[in-house]
Image (cartoon, rainbow, N blue to C red; front, side, top):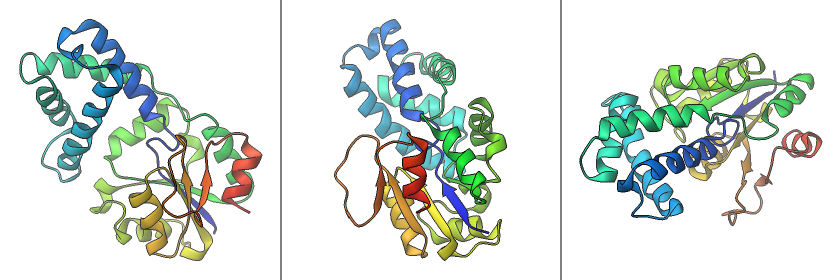
Length: 226
């Protein structure tokens, strides 16, 4: 069966939107976060998020512990637990799909392709995102680094994702926004990658198919499944 493998965060789920909205709310309410312009705060937060997320993926911290330690590092002390909780509440209040995600998945499935999410995160968090943004019924399988034991770009997680639908690499396409994890990881195992480049970055390799948006559906579908 042909299969579209999809990253979740910032490919189908608009993580950057929810993060920016949450940080803006926190910054307006907490003077400790007002020492930086919002975009600088967002950059600092992103670096810490990536750092502590690796601890979550390794099983050394829970998501809640990582979030509190992230804000502890960001503000350098004080009520980091309260700030972390306020962030979580604000972050989840602004969850939404990347524009066009649900329509695209429906179109892919209408073409007879399976849809498998391949994500570096924990099962419970990613299931919650899919449910909250209305994509659960449009996904055949959710494959996480937590359950597989390795993260993208490791070949093992891609092989596992292919295995759950009995697909060969030649019958698969990988859509994702992260070049090393999604594009390079897929290419290394013979899967055709499509890079979702919503912010207009320079492509490291113009021979790789690229999408700037998931809309209009027909255009995105033609790039994914030519």
